[in-house]
Image (cartoon, rainbow, N blue to C red; front, top):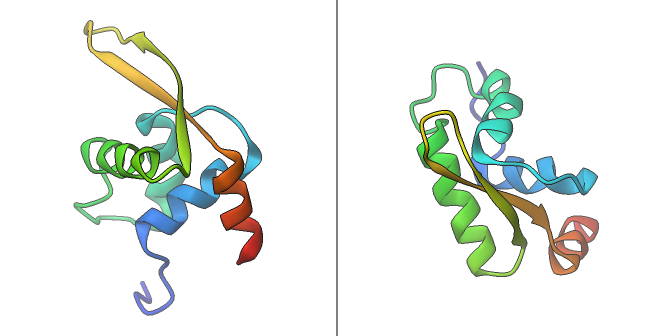
Length: 90
Protein backbone atom coordinates (compact mmCIF):
# COMPACT_ATOMS: atom_id res chain seq x y z
CA UNK A 1 0.00 0.00 0.00
CA UNK A 2 1.34 3.44 -0.93
CA UNK A 3 0.46 5.60 2.08
CA UNK A 4 1.73 8.76 0.40
CA UNK A 5 -1.28 8.77 -1.95
CA UNK A 6 -3.82 7.72 0.66
CA UNK A 7 -6.33 10.48 1.43
CA UNK A 8 -6.92 11.40 5.06
CA UNK A 9 -9.91 9.39 6.28
CA UNK A 10 -11.93 12.53 7.01
CA UNK A 11 -11.60 13.68 3.38
CA UNK A 12 -12.66 10.25 2.17
CA UNK A 13 -15.70 10.41 4.47
CA UNK A 14 -16.75 13.83 3.15
CA UNK A 15 -16.46 12.64 -0.45
CA UNK A 16 -18.53 9.55 0.40
CA UNK A 17 -21.45 11.86 1.12
CA UNK A 18 -21.09 13.66 -2.23
CA UNK A 19 -23.90 11.60 -3.74
CA UNK A 20 -26.40 13.19 -1.32
CA UNK A 21 -27.47 9.91 0.33
CA UNK A 22 -28.00 9.55 4.07
CA UNK A 23 -25.42 7.20 5.61
CA UNK A 24 -24.48 5.90 9.04
CA UNK A 25 -20.98 5.04 10.27
CA UNK A 26 -21.31 1.38 9.27
CA UNK A 27 -22.26 2.29 5.68
CA UNK A 28 -19.32 4.70 5.46
CA UNK A 29 -16.99 1.99 6.80
CA UNK A 30 -18.18 -0.43 4.12
CA UNK A 31 -17.06 2.09 1.49
CA UNK A 32 -13.85 3.12 3.26
CA UNK A 33 -12.50 -0.28 4.34
CA UNK A 34 -11.17 -1.34 0.91
CA UNK A 35 -9.12 1.87 0.70
CA UNK A 36 -7.73 1.57 4.25
CA UNK A 37 -7.07 -2.17 4.71
CA UNK A 38 -5.71 -3.11 8.10
CA UNK A 39 -5.84 0.45 9.43
CA UNK A 40 -7.03 0.39 13.05
CA UNK A 41 -8.38 3.94 12.77
CA UNK A 42 -10.77 2.83 10.02
CA UNK A 43 -13.48 1.46 12.30
CA UNK A 44 -17.12 2.20 13.12
CA UNK A 45 -16.27 4.06 16.37
CA UNK A 46 -13.61 6.17 14.65
CA UNK A 47 -15.85 6.99 11.69
CA UNK A 48 -18.73 7.81 14.06
CA UNK A 49 -16.47 10.38 15.75
CA UNK A 50 -15.54 11.88 12.38
CA UNK A 51 -19.24 12.13 11.50
CA UNK A 52 -19.98 13.97 14.75
CA UNK A 53 -17.08 16.35 14.13
CA UNK A 54 -18.23 17.03 10.56
CA UNK A 55 -21.71 17.72 11.89
CA UNK A 56 -20.28 20.14 14.45
CA UNK A 57 -18.63 22.25 11.73
CA UNK A 58 -21.69 22.20 9.47
CA UNK A 59 -20.48 19.89 6.69
CA UNK A 60 -22.97 17.16 7.61
CA UNK A 61 -26.33 17.27 9.31
CA UNK A 62 -28.13 14.54 11.17
CA UNK A 63 -30.85 13.10 8.97
CA UNK A 64 -32.51 10.71 11.41
CA UNK A 65 -31.75 7.80 13.64
CA UNK A 66 -32.82 4.24 14.33
CA UNK A 67 -32.23 1.43 16.82
CA UNK A 68 -29.96 -1.32 15.55
CA UNK A 69 -30.39 -5.04 16.29
CA UNK A 70 -28.70 -4.60 19.67
CA UNK A 71 -30.94 -1.67 20.66
CA UNK A 72 -28.21 0.92 20.14
CA UNK A 73 -29.18 4.30 18.70
CA UNK A 74 -27.56 4.85 15.28
CA UNK A 75 -27.47 8.29 13.66
CA UNK A 76 -27.82 8.85 9.94
CA UNK A 77 -26.06 11.81 8.33
CA UNK A 78 -26.43 13.67 5.05
CA UNK A 79 -24.20 16.32 3.52
CA UNK A 80 -25.30 19.93 3.97
CA UNK A 81 -25.34 22.60 1.29
CA UNK A 82 -22.26 24.06 2.95
CA UNK A 83 -20.59 20.64 2.72
CA UNK A 84 -21.46 20.36 -0.97
CA UNK A 85 -19.92 23.78 -1.57
CA UNK A 86 -16.73 22.59 0.13
CA UNK A 87 -16.57 19.48 -2.09
CA UNK A 88 -17.12 21.55 -5.25
CA UNK A 89 -14.26 23.94 -4.32
CA UNK A 90 -11.72 21.10 -4.42
